[in-house]
Image 1 (tube, rainbow, N blue to C red):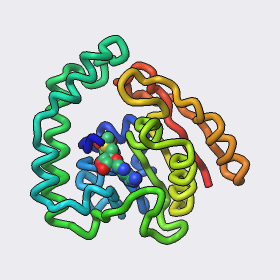
Image 2 (cartoon, helix red, strand yellow):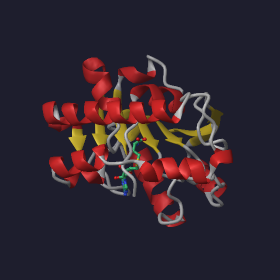
Image 3 (tube, rainbow, N blue to C red):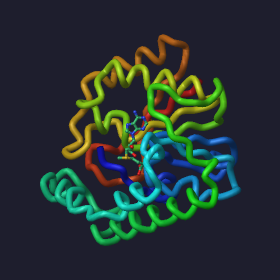
Length: 218
Ligand SMILES: C[S@@+](CC[C@H](N)C(=O)[O-])C[C@H]1O[C@@H](n2cnc3c(N)ncnc32)[C@H](O)[C@@H]1O
């Protein structure tokens, strides 16, 4: 699986984050090389988690700095399914990726305690540990290799460690952005467990069919 590196600006747009949202204890789950935690610095008690943090630092740095032609190829192969008005150009997107990766690598070296290796559906955090739990580009993006049962268990775990909200983006497959057939059933299961599941349109635009995030309120 691709380990990508998005910036705080992308997270703000994907998850419609306000300054108030960014004030508490926040978990960036499946954070990869994202600079979300790094850019927040001491403004929030933010923690990143990802199985890739088990890897030696040099190896992860090599992966994050490596050629991204596969990513570019995906946007070319599915040209009609991507829009560029948020990023502007492919070059600008790549520049953000590189900036995020470098910020992530520097912050991880400076504040290693903020970066915890872990793999859904089991996280090493207490119940209700975070005000806000974010998960970008893992759930639904990789539906296929990760099946319905995995998604159900992962969502249960994200809710367990949250005392406020869980936000998930996007809600479609990677590439062409095909819908995920079991999305509605999972939303019903979350509601049946006593939580609120709402879907909100977001301003972030890249995959044409990915204009919505899920907000689970515990
Ligand atoms: C496409 S990247 C997204 C990274 C970051 N959230 C972003 O938006 O740039 C997907 C990430 O999910 C991580 N991942 C894969 N399996 C996982 C699991 N079972 N639990 C948590 N993260 C996982 C990968 O290591 C990878 O960093």
